[in-house]
Length: 437
Image (cartoon, rainbow, N blue to C red; front, top):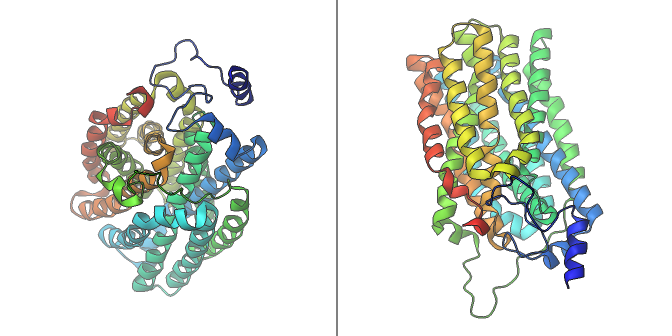
């Protein structure tokens, strides 16, 4: 048995004891021991190393395409206001249409994934999002505000299911690999968003219309979300409860779990921070700093690039110092960057603030997803709950900031998210790994 344990550790590139300087709450434990709510036997038998590598690469790609889709929309919000001749508050109403669609999809996403698997869920979600993107493009060509709102509603449904599905798949891959990799998946999202922001800035500078831009993106989404999920881990239906065990592993019970709800509150603060930056940095730069639309898109790109870099390398910091310490540091950095961006009078100083803001916003959401999935037995239900709470804030918060922006200006309105940032800072301890509690 001991020989098997050593072989399993060597296979996954891990040793049975933590490295020098590693915090006790770190998730770097030998996968041969029963950690994270599962055993190495179950982990190593459910997927081979080539399957895990292929699943990780496919998940990375799906996160990246998700970010590309989001940024293709977010980076060109100023163009939407111009095409439809609407104010920031009216733009906020359109963003609420996205939130409304997601609110329908998010609470049921865990159940959908449990029934059809993450691969089919991503395929269906990608198709809905692509068709809705075509609808948005056609509505903008017709300069129809109601048509744009309806299309955005279905866009939100597709994105909501897509987001939960990719996070469940990412958590499954992370557990089976036995190391922190979720931030790198979210780095793929940020990288896709950065690429989308650059494309948006370039097309805006060249005078290419947003409808044509969205039609091309819709075609890319339809193809890649159909092909990439074939490499996801095989779908295994949830096992029936053991004798004498209640059926509370179902998704509804996760809403009564105190730790899951506290993690949800932390993620709420994190997603408000990220969502406000994604939706309003470009607009705030145009309105508050007299920047051009392309310059505003580049400022958004700087915000996303900072998130991408920190997410790509942040897993090492989490393994070395633990989730809680990194989470608190992240929220403090986000608060400092936000304040600098809002209060700066110079474009370069505001850009530095946006970079610090993006760096601080980078790791909190992926850490929340990992924390929710600490026990694989309840991972799908708890990730669905935390995702629902987080994405409600991610999608509904920015529109509310738009309404506030009509009263005091969108740049100053961004200071309102200081409150949830501080809340996440205070409640960061809820994300402590289960095996370290």
